Structures are given as C-alpha cells and as structure tokens.
Length: 390
Ligand SMILES: Nc1nc2c(c(=O)[nH]1)N[C@H]1C(S)=C(S)[C@@H](COP(=O)(O)O)O[C@H]1N2
Ligand SMILES: [Mo]
Image 1 (tube, rainbow, N blue to C red):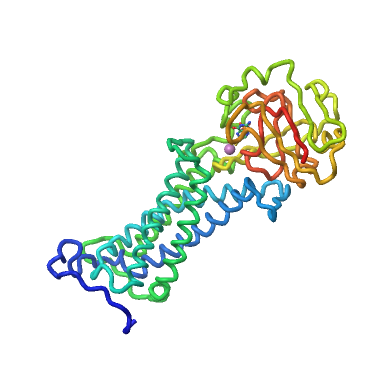
Image 2 (cartoon, rainbow, N blue to C red; image 1 turned 180 degrees about the vertical axis):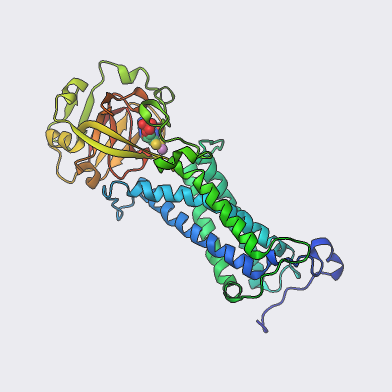
C-alpha cells in the first residue's frame, strides 16, 4: 500500500477514552474470535439469502422461474429453515457486534481512501443486518407497526446487506484468513473469567436454546418445548392456526351468502358458474397437505375438495393453463394468487370444502379454499369465488 494516497492523521490530543492506545486488549475482541463468529454468521447469512430469495421468486415469479408442485414439503423446509436460521443467528449477530465494536475507535480513523470506503461500507452492513433481523422477527411475531410493506422492504434490505457483506469480505480477506489460521494458547485475558472457547460455547449454546424453544412451530413433535415460538401449529379452529379471520377479511356476509357461486372464466370454451351443491356433487379428492406460512410455522391437515384440474377440464381450459385464483375478500395483498401450470395440473391441488372430514370453518376459507402441494401459505387463497384461466 506504500504509494497510496494517505489521509492526514487528526491531532494526537483527540486520542482519549476509547480512542487511546491499547483501550481494548481483550482476547474476545481479537482477530481469531471475530473471524470464527463471522464464519458462522456468514453461513447463516448465505442460508437466509438463498431461502429468502426462493420464497420471493415463488411469490413474484419472473418468466424464467417455474416453482414445482413436488416435493410436497419443499417450501415448508426452505421457509422453516429461513425463519429458524434467522432466529438462531440472533446471538451470533450480537456476539459479532460485541467482538468488533472496538474497531469503531481505530486510530487513525482512516488511513487511505480504500480504508475509508471499507469503513463506510460497514454502515449498510451493520444497519442492513439490524434492519433485516428486527423486521423479520417482528413479522414472525405478527407485529407490523410499519408504514411500508414488509416483503418489499425485507427484499431490498437483503440486497443492500448482502452487497455490503461482499464488499466487507473482499476488504477483510487477509484479516479473515489470518484469524482463521492462527492458533495460539487460549487463556483467559486479565480481568475476565471468559476464555475464547467459553465465549464461543456460550454463543453456540444460546443459538441452540433459541432454536429448540421455537422450532416446534413447524416440527410438531417439538411443540411442547416451543416455549418461545410465536405460533402453536395445533391451536386454532379445526386444529390449524388462522392468520386472517373472515371478520378481518370482511367476508363474514359474502362467504355465507346462498347466492355465492364459483366462476370459472377467462381462456375457456365453457365458462362455469357453480353452486357449492354442484361442486360437492363432482368427484372429490382427499390430500394431506401442510399450510406452510412464510412466518415459519406450518400445520398439516387432511383436506377434501374438488381438483382444480377437473374444474379446468370441465370448463374446457387448454392444457398447461395458468390460473388466477381470486377471493371474496374485497381488498388486501393476499386476496388472490396464481397457480402456475405445474400447480394447476397437480392432482393434489384442490378447492377444498372439508378439513379433517368437517365442513371448512369460515376462518379457514368456507365455502372454498385453495390448498395445493409445495406452496407458501400466502398463496393458499381462502374464500375463493373465481378462477380466471390465462
Ligand atoms: N383471501 C385470503 N386468503 C389467505 C390469506 C388472506 O389474507 N386472504 N392469508 C394467507 C396466509 S398468510 C396463510 S398462512 C393461510 C393460512 O390459512 P389458515 O388460516 O387456514 O391457516 O391462508 C392464506 N390465505
Ligand atoms: Mo401466511
């Protein structure tokens, strides 16, 4: 770096408090500790980014992306992993911030332009990470006090954070390599009872404890010990949680109106308008499928209804049809969803009118709800009134 432009060093008399020489000497702030925590955090960020991107692509598919309808539980796993990894990474993030905060006070504040850029890139990295964790956890907890739409903010926040992380990793590569390679004797630093190993073990223990206390919201046998899980996957009408009730969706009248009909229209040769009686008279099919919510909980149930592909065939829709499924719900982001050609033609994709052999509860989507394999919960539209074939 010899020939580089140097940034002038500020006057020495500013070196007080945390800025003074040797203000931080603890082993818990050294290169090896920060590199090891960083490695674990980096793996968590990679899992979070990939699983988050998958969930985004399913909900807003570009032309090149076709999400399959099999395996049935794939989305349940990727999204369960997304939320579980986010929760498990909380102690890692806090430990990383603790381990590196003395770096805020390095002297001189910036040696050269490259150092300055590297330090400025920490702003979107730390800010972005905190934003992603706070908004993600609020969302999982069902708490949304913000004036912007969560998925959009969480999506763009991910790119800012990951972009800043890549810059950070490139700038820090030599330090990281040194930190991971170095092995010196692990002794408790003066004035602290905690060795590096003790510190790292405590963080790992906190991650495991948080995971065990929440993972039961998607792995049913562990629900008894899921004392911190925002959801119990068994609690709700007919043993399934409800996110949006009929009341909240504004469909308490329209969903029980005897004049309700299912319309099948669009690119079809025989448009249909069917009463629930007529639909119940059609061949029915049963499927055991989960509701796999983006918030990380999931719940399995046995559904009965009519196959979407049978309705499409009855209406004379072309094979490979894509279908817009609309709800009685007058407004709201989740009032409609799209079935791509794989989901529309899957034999287990149903418009269900029964769950666990009982008529569907109004909060689960009476008179008809969409339920299909390998779909996010937000795309399992309730109170269906119209299929539009494209
Ligand atoms: N019309 C409509 N359908 C909807 C929603 C909604 O808000 N409106 N919420 C979705 C979400 S986020 C989930 S997780 C599932 C939950 O279905 P359940 O309430 O039967 O468990 O319904 C989906 N279907
Ligand atoms: Mo959901």
